[in-house]
Length: 80
Length: 233
Figure 1: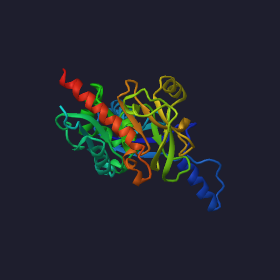
Figure 2 (figure 1 turned 180 degrees about the vertical axis):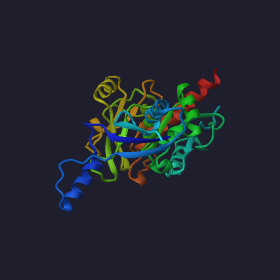
Figure 3 (figure 1 turned 90 degrees about the vertical axis):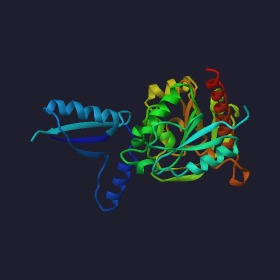
Figure 4 (figure 1 turned 45 degrees about the horizontal axis):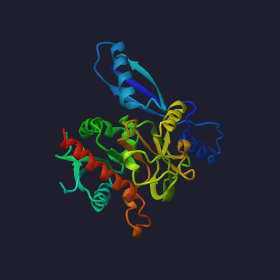
């Protein structure tokens, strides 16, 4: 089974990286009012079903993949 | 017993201030012991722990995040739970936050620049193990060198920490965008401290400042007291 985890800086949390990217885009002529940079984690795992996989990945996010203080995450399970 | 208290300096892959920390601890009267991250136990008779600066595990995922699962960190958790003094410097502070031994998290500097200079740091609370040789309001000159040193916690946590005196050091100026200019915090029990500035680089006037020696000497005092307490068990 495959899972995709999308980790984002939480709303209201300053994202200096996003702001730097916005400024760089502007130098290239792209007017963008806001940029937020997160990360994607692709996982391949064995699980009985999609629900079990989602529960496991949720735990991974809480314990390591994201820091709940400053990051939110979204999990998508791709059942093959 | 007049032998020097043993203080473990944990070495992670990517630590780069470990030898400086060991040297400075030696200069302050401790016997430093290097402990590898993959070790499951701290060295025998260790009465203090330092998590040094650097870029453990290449700062993968988030700074300090990967160190959380290092085998040695279980031993550090047990040591801290038993009241042993633990000091995290720079990356060590980031690790202690990610390990949840300290509140908050270190985020990329607001100005996105690596800051590398001596900064004035004000003592907010000297009623903790590590600040015993300082006085409230004292301004220490300590070097910082970090790209991800902006301490952050949610508002409720921040207010609570301030009320409990857990915010022990603040920058005099806005160095990196840290909430409340926080430079160093302690846990509720007061035996675990993390700070972004580097006391181990400031233990001799020849290096520009000897103020870091005040913190490290207090750690050595705390380790000696912890050793005595352990021996009495």
